[in-house]
Image 1 (cartoon, rainbow, N blue to C red):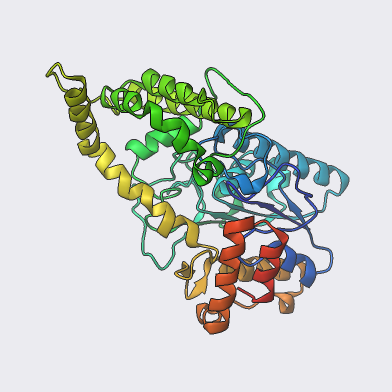
Image 2: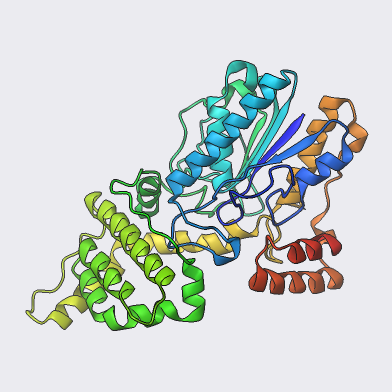
Length: 413
């Protein structure tokens, strides 16, 4: 059998060796453990961009370009479907387990939606962690966390799949979500949900240029501030007057700053295109349509417009929801010492135990399953030291770096 894993945004690379198990990159490497503990089990790691566009790009991944979310997810779905088709054709008796986190959960869920009946029968388990397309009536088994129940009216950031999508899997699809995680738990119809709709759209006017640098590198080295500072008044006027084109033009002007290198200019131009497109979409959907002041003073009218934007109920509601990315979305795998749990077990450890139990039962080797690791065993002074060292390496080198990976495994974080 084969365990197929799709990591989330910022944790994957199209050049990855798919035969090297990485799991969700951070956390317990369940793919690797499954290979080690069971004969006849192999893993396949999805090599895709895992990108959400240029604005949220991460330099430590080393991507040559940063496709928008829709293109990245579609690429992931295509590659996983091709993998299952190839394996099924070569070895029809192969069983599969799928796991995905965040964008990877989106990919895995969409793959499950499109499998043939014969292929679907070969799926023994699937784990969709923080699925942006989570729904309440899609047929998946909802697994909540220590953060409490989830409203039946809430869905994933990108909306939900059709009702009954996973019914044919008869409970084998587990959808794991924390209350307040904006990736998988937001009210429909709000500002964040509309941003999610935009993220799924094909770019109406595709624009791509290389070479580029990741946006976080420009924030770190100060080049973004150097570029934007001279056009800040122009940017403020555009925002205050609800003018998406004006925002884009201001950022394009920032890209022309002579202190930027060519890759940085390209990044700023891509950001201008991306931000303008998003703001135009939101405005067309009835968001950010505030009026500036009417005093005749550009400065005063802009200030009034910005205040109205900040006080807009949709914006006010979206801000705390979006901040949930930090204390809900990025804590499932042990990134933070204040990690999320399921029945007293850290989420990645819970997935590891449940997955290996399913594999063990399927192969007739139940004794090889990994026991659930109590959350208390992931704490303590030694773990605290190891986690601090890992955080340092993560900040400097990135969580995919071999040194960071070795520290995680050495301290059994």
